[in-house]
Each structure stands twice: as structure tokens, then as C-alpha cells.
Length: 245
Image (cartoon, rainbow, N blue to C red; front, side, top):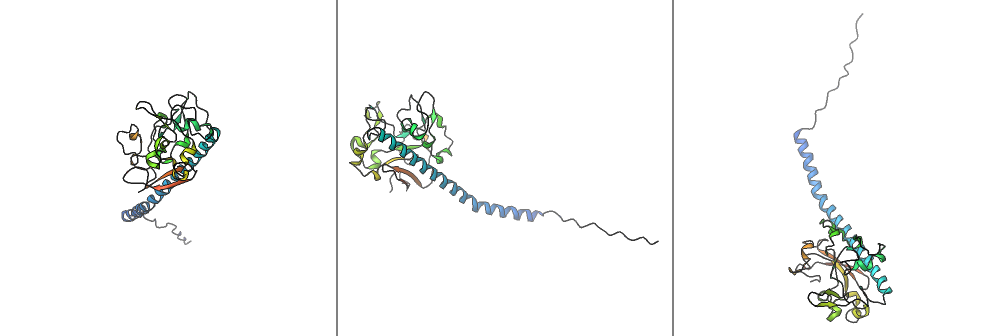
């Protein structure tokens, strides 16, 4: 009997990628990455800037409630013999940190009241600043600056609406009422808080300047919240300070 030949079921195997093909694929991926990464970085920065604006708005609403409960006086209030630092801590407790806004606004922001425990008021943490890896629990004054006379066109003691506590240099001023600020400048033109960085704080003798980011954390702009409640974004002055140009 004649035997039937078996069908040849073997199939030719396909060779792997050649070195040239791999190099081409890698080159294409590198090109796509170079195109996409700047867009992703910009989107992340925009998201952080938006969150920062939201933080400022929440801080202002808490400040408004505090002022309403204290006969229109700004923190630390009518009976205080001192004012607040211009640089804002993100932490608060009953000792040391009674000269920064989080100490007074904590309960209005939903945080526990000040006691002996050091707590972080996250609303006072700029998301852009967190990229710099600073230890917030050290209480460094690096997140925001509050309003200052030289940057807002205010004069005299009212130039520091929240007062100032520098007893060492005999420069203590008490806080003021909102109406006192309004009598000098429209509230829409006087900011409460602004992003802080070393481009804005130009004085090298400033004791907390080295705690600040070298450059503005939102790129070419900074966020501001004003005494009328609006939040604005303004271009950075490359010559220093907060105002443009």
C-alpha cells in the first residue's frame, strides 16, 4: 500500500526586530516624549496654581469670619499689643506661632484650635511650594507673605494692617480695622496674601529669605488675594518686589 505523505505543518518563524527597527522605535518614543513632557509639566503647574488660588480664597473667607466676630478688627485683634509677621507660617500652636494668621484662623478653617501640639494648616501650604521639599513642621515662614506697606501704597502705621511684632528693633505696631485700610486705598487694590519667593524678597538681610524658593513657584506669575475677596494672578516683576512693572 502506498503511504500518503504527511502535510508539512511547520511554518516559517518570523525574525525579531532588527537593531535598526529598535533604534527607530526608540527615536520615535523620544520625540513624542520631548513633545508631551513640557505640556504635562505646564498642566501640572496650572493645576497647582489653581489649587493655590483656592487656598487663598479659603483663607480670605476664614479671615472675613474672624473679622466679623471681632468688631471689624484684623488679627490679632483690638486688645493685642503686637501685630503679625509679614511671612506666614504653615504651622500653629499656642507658643511661638501666635504671630501668624493660621493661629487665629485655624478653627474657621475647620482645624483644631491652637494648643501645645504643632499642627499644619494645609490651606496655608502653596501646592507649588511643596515641590521644593521644605519641612513644613519646622515652622519656616516660606509660603505666603501678607500685605506690606511698600507694595500696596499704604502709609503710616496702616501700612501694616495686621500690625508688626518686631520688639527687638522697637518696631511694634498694633493691628487695624478694615475701615482704616479702606480710608487709604480701595480694598480691591490692597492684597492680603501673595506667593513668596526670593525674586520678590530682594533684601539679603531678611532672616527668612533663604527659606523661600529661588524662583516664583508658578512660573512667570504669582497669585494674590485682596481685601475685597477677589483672587488675581499677576506677572512677576523680574526686578524684584511684588508689583508689575
